[in-house]
Image (spheres, rainbow, N blue to C red):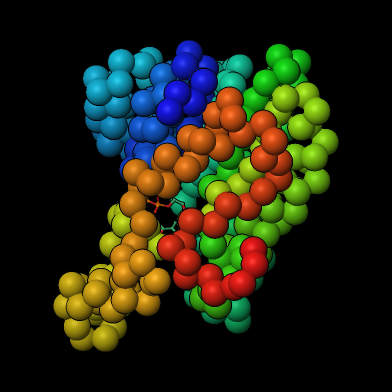
Length: 260
Ligand code: NAP
């Protein structure tokens, strides 16, 4: 399917690996020129080269921490007029409610709520003027179904979700479409680390930990960055213009619910 976005330009935050890379690849496949971002320059450069070679699109990199003002300014300087913005960053650490003080809360709110909001604030006016734009925020399934140890994530990401709910409806009449995409468990470095920690804590092998985790999902597996990227690219496409302020859960049916 031609997504109708060939020649558009996208910023994809936190995209040298994992879900961000999955989105970048599918946008590139659709003919979108990319500004990719991550903190580690070597990995980012390797990803950018692979994507440019494979899909023949223009790819530039900004090796900065997107959760800092310096990082965001560098991104906006490299690509001041993106047609597509994909917000993403690492998630807050796991822990317990009793361990989190002001410092931990401010960091989580900055990284997973304020950073995407500030990027939207900077980019939405241009999209409105040009009468076309797509913004997609990678949040988490924990927005719908809390993971107790990820209280920082549950809360900060719900703050972003609240902002998007209202703002998406204010900008849609200008052809600017904002949605959120909510990953459940996907096979990325992040979940690899989680499985390693689980295996160590339970005294089992990583493969046993993986099999147990897979068995808990209705599909019997984790999601892939490729299928995540394809769904995300559709939400950034010419055909997503009537999908406004939604929260698309990609979790293999793990969230047990009759509706929604
Ligand atoms: P991942 O495989 O660890 O990849 C994270 C990517 O983001 C890397 O490219 C990393 O590169 C970059 N990154 C991290 N922090 C950054 C920062 N501050 N500034 C710029 N780049 C940054 O992680 P993932 O699994 O794709 O997860 C992506 C997001 O989805 C996270 O917020 C995660 O919490 C959320 N999520 C993931 C899952 C899942 O199952 N995978 C489920 C629910 C939610 P550098 O380290 O070089 O910066």
